[in-house]
Length: 329
Image (cartoon, rainbow, N blue to C red; front, side, top):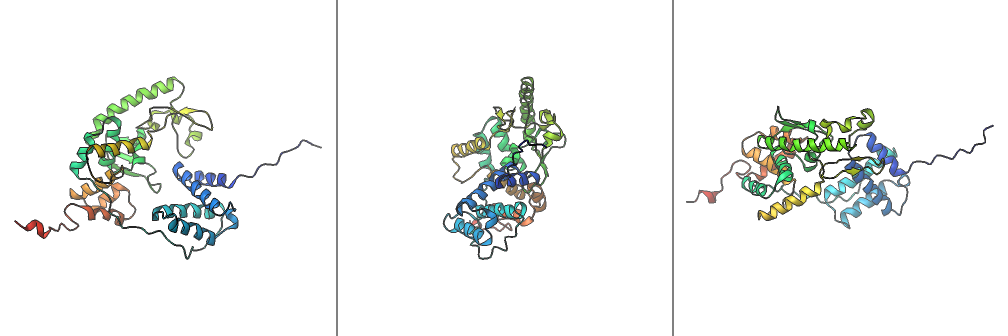
């Protein structure tokens, strides 16, 4: 008879189950962090009660509190709702009802901020090096900031003049153009990145994060050149779980700060951000006569109505209407 004591296995915590489910569904790390943050806030709001003991009434109270007391934006409230719905449907397998009576945050009908072509040139004059290259790709290809920073070597096709955006918003891939003006400086930049990568390998490192657990399927892929980031960070990082060192991409805050400073130095009085260059990309294509379906495809919009917002910020008006004041001589 075996009398060896077998310790009872600890049940996984709720947030661990959430993380496991998110990773199984191949959601991004950022989504995982955001969802867990909102689920924590939901639980703390209700005095640390377990979600399985709560339901539609408690969810409505929390989301209404965000809208009324915290006055969050509609997108923020919707983000919290998505996290909680994910918890109940994907992890707890519990029906939460129709959420009737939920007080929704107001969604303002704001138009996107767009720079003129002259203003874009002014901003570029106040940017240098890699940061200028990143902003130029955002404007010239219509990429979001994180889409640009997460580019891998294999995603840039110089021969076909195109960029493949992997796992964009909504986990969708799309193809957009590679601006001709960036090709030569980008090739020179990649030569420098190659040398950095070779030094990292020589020192026993040279690894990058691979999505979808590819590192387990292909153990050596994380050190291969084609998987390296186009815009690597200047310093290596250390994985807190494995202790392994690698090199991540440039942090988004570095680009955001540079864009704010460049806007200030250019004396442009618009509330612009990195995303403004994506808005400007779409608007300027429409100004140049490209059809809206083409712009929709390049931006990766699911619905053309999302793309149509840019027709309202064209310099010539929605239908090319000339102001009567401009007819006065």
